[in-house]
Image (cartoon, rainbow, N blue to C red; front, side):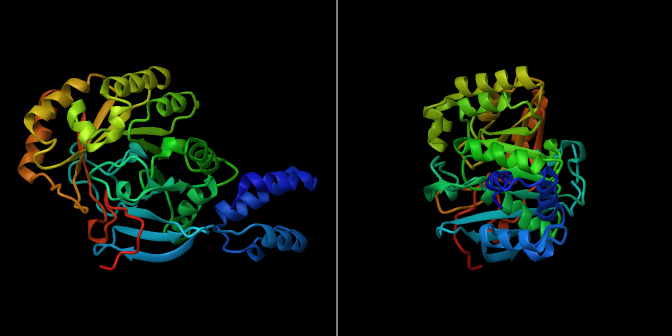
Length: 355
């Protein structure tokens, strides 16, 4: 629902301030499916809202469940026909070794605990970043999502399963849709609305340095994650063309400046790709980059997409982890979700999968 436009209409109608709170409660707390269910509102207002505002801006095309039921992937059609994907991760498996594994950055205080539900949401239809390991990057950018479309992904799974954490790690680069991303975060965090704790919201960027600087000035404690995936400029530029615009020196300075302003931990995401970025030399170079005590590396198994890359073997992954650990780097392995339904990191392709 378009909260911003709704506020303007209620103000023009000279409605009392409490009316907006009633509507927010109906939508974000009671999780109504249609305006007739908002019984705290007058019949006249419910009818007007039904004419001007839809509860959901997304049309569900398919919903896939992983075999072990720990994840689900929803494919949505937008009103203009574009398609996006959203993933729910159910933390029904406690981490085997909390010091070695993590599921995501959101909710760091209860990381690894069963019973949490994390929604991985998209901020754009497609993506312009063209990262070589990512299915979304092969789509190209269709358009930015509105804050309404971003929030409705969360509400869909809130109605089905309940939601404890939100991560902007789906399709698109959040910092290239900065205004709508921040607006969505503020609405999700609104105490009169969905009231999701700000530390249970994470934003991942491929390294948009100006966006990191703006994010540091937002004066809230949402989590920041950096899609790093290489420890030298040559390799990173091959994997992520954005590195030509914001090379490692520029990126790391932006992160350091962010930490100076916020004193917040930053997660560096690192896919391990066989023969590309998983050598001991890569681990040593990565350790040299990870100089700040508030840096944390999250190692991720590469999941196959349409391309020539292959995942690192378990032996190489373990050696990479052990090397970082011995060099004093704060590091975990991320638990993978949804690989069997093409819902894992890098696998969202904006299409209905026939499995």
